[in-house]
Amino acid sequence: MSFLDLFRQLRPLRHDDQTKLESIGKHLSSEEQDIIYAAYRQRKLAIHFPTFGTGVVTDEAFPQLHLLAAGSHLEELAASINAKVRSKVEHKLFHRIADHPLHLSALLAPHLRIPAAKEAILLQIFSRERFHILLAGDTGAEQQLLHDAAALAPRASAAAFSRKKAAGAVFSALQQADQGLCCLSGLQHLNNSEQAALASAMEKGEAHPRGKPTLDARIKVLAAVSPRKSLAAEALPISAPLLRAFSLIFFLKKGKEDIPDAGQLSAADLALFQDFARFASSVSVQFPSALEHEVLAFVERLQKKSRLSHPHLISAVISMAQALSRMHLADKVGKSELRQAMDIMEQSLAVQNVSAASRSR
Image 1 (cartoon, rainbow, N blue to C red):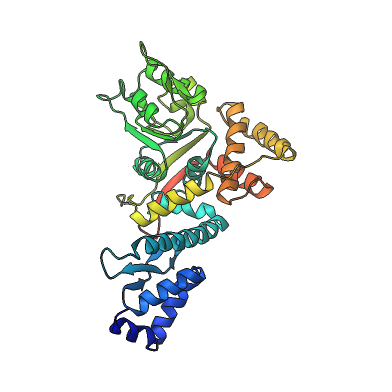
Image 2: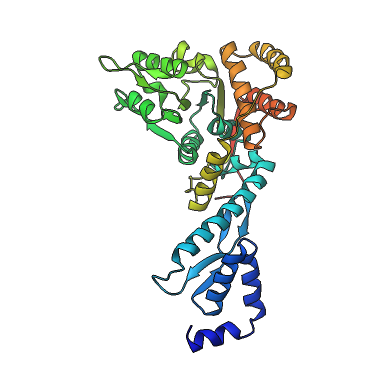
């Protein structure tokens, strides 16, 4: 140890330095504390406080070590400590998110107010089970929701069909989204055989391109279609089999105010959302048999005003309740999660007015 290092080692610490060391010290073993405290006194490293959070979760400041000498023998230890501290803070934020998980829906087109549609899409992203959502309208909000959902989902593909681009693009999108979210817009431009292939993939989890091997397509579909005239299921320009493959349909109607252009998701929002999605995905959620009668009674009532498939409605409401419980980091569906899922599904049958939110991205 040089004389200068010895002097720095013995000099009294300022209050600010002591506070910084205490903030990192609580995450360290005794041995690590000795090494880091000595290196800090010798000015071989600094401590800074980046923030970690999203637009819907309060930022959390946490200590990180920054080496002041390149190639230092401390490099490996500092990297290990930084990763450990970040992981602890991340888990703290995850449990804060889990207290009010539906708040994350604000990251989907946050400048637009369509709460039920956003919450349904959020649950679809977090669902292990497959269910499918259709957005019907020509407001511009449909494309923004698909864009943000594809960005947020840990695994996703996106395709926009037009009169000039449909053939072949369906199977490519399905294959890319295997075991993830498949975001498709312009369903009205698919011909009958393409619609049939899409419906089959949604039902069976596999696609059958003509003259080619079967493709795995274990997908959740989030799609958009422009109605011909009115906002009603019978006015949608898609085949009956394809319509029946969807579990929820949201009819979107533009309000009086203009819909603002979409912004970009911040890197921090995107990273934390996906980290939380991966963390929550490890939670296996059971659906209690005691709640099955509530689902059946709800679907029987819903079926009277819906043209959607009875089995699909049952499966979807259970999947949504499980996804919400997973976001709560709970291993069993409770009555509260089930009722919230049923409420979102019931709202999907009503026309949703799209309006600008007061908060922008």
